[in-house]
Every structure is written in structure tokens, then in C-alpha cells.
Image (cartoon, rainbow, N blue to C red):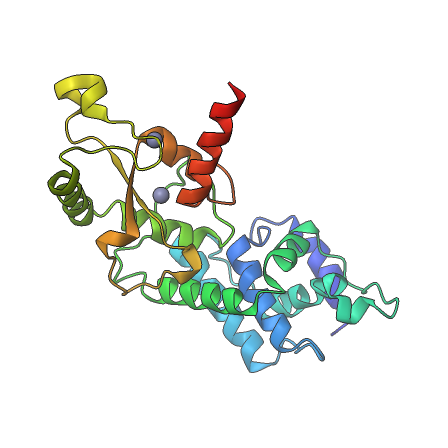
Length: 262
Ligand SMILES: [Zn+2]
Ligand SMILES: [Zn+2]
């Protein structure tokens, strides 16, 4: 890697044209890093150029990074170098890595470097959502929802999750199924029933939450009613309140544990 690469990075990190790397971008970069761990590719490598191009496309889909220097091949090659200091295979001989970077790479490293299958699935998911942005009616556009914490798997799959669970058609089918089966719409975690609590005003009110792990979501794949759970607004909010989205089991366990402490 060229020596001047480092100074380029310190200049660009504060510039508007090159905002700090998002979690999705770091996940894609980590994937490339791990495939070339022994000898990192330069900015001229085809895969580095491909990732640079893809990140440009993803930036446009999110409405950021329209400048020509946004995630250019040089920036991508440098980012790969930032993973060096988190890589035990590289640091075990006492080498600390020439490349600084920041804590973000370490966080993504710890979450994904030892789970290659999960990483590959997340990468596939991110790539296909971005590639299908047009067909999917631009799930990546629009404002962030403050009550929904971006998941471990990044913003792209977070958005796909929300698109899925808000699909009007699916929501209606799910509610119809529950009404036919149980005669009411109750939260699957805390059993809250809007109609029981609020009378007529609560009729038909319940959130629908997609329960499948995010990395297993692929666009184009059909959502089954079994992939959806009915949750009251409070429980749904708790599920998405932190980066680690709670599973239904974890949510129920949280409720149980809280009850014991009252
Ligand atoms: Zn609930
Ligand atoms: Zn949800």
C-alpha cells in the first residue's frame, strides 16, 4: 500500500465528501479483508474496484456520497488496512499494524470475524437489497425511525425488516389469521389486547413484527405468516430498542425477569 495513503485518510475522515464508514460498509469491507487476509489487495485490484463501485451505488441509494472521491478504490484499500490491528493472525507476532482506523472496525470485527457464515449471509443480503432497490420500491430512501435502533447487521437489512413487517397486505392477513384462530388480537409476548383495554377504539390495533433473524432475510424471498408475530406497540419498541434486537424468547424472558423484581 502506498505510504501517502495514510495521510489521505486523515484528510478525508473529516471531509463532508467522505463521511465515516457505516456499519454496512464496514461489514462489506471486512468480508473482502478476510478473503485476502494474507496479502491485502491494492487499489488496482478488481475486487477493491468492485467494492468501491458498489459502495458508491449504496451511497446513492441512501442519498449520501455523491462526490467523485466517495469510497474511491484508494479509500477502500486503506480501509482494509484498518482491520489489520484487530486481526490476531497478524498481531500475534507483536506487529500492531501500521494503520490506525478507529474503534468501529473493531466492533464489526468482534461481531462477524469468527462467524463466516453469518457474515456471508449478511453480505449477500446487503448486496441484493441494494441491487434490487428499484424493484423493492426504494426501501433505503426515507428518514430513519428514531425508535428503531439500527441492528447489528446494519442499516440495509434494518430497512428491509421494516418494509417486510409493514407490508399492509401481510399485516392484514396475519391479523385475520390470528382472529380466526384466537378470536382476538393479543400481544404474543405480554398478552396485551388493545380491544379489551380500550374497547371499540382498540379494535384491530396491534403491531406485526418479523421474527426471522436479519441475516436470513433475502429480498425476493416470500414472507410467510409464520415469520410474523403480533406484538403490542410497547413490546415491539423494546425488541428494537438496542442494536441487539431481542428474539421473542428473549423478550418474554425480559418480561418474566422484570416481574420477579417488582
Ligand atoms: Zn406486549
Ligand atoms: Zn420489528
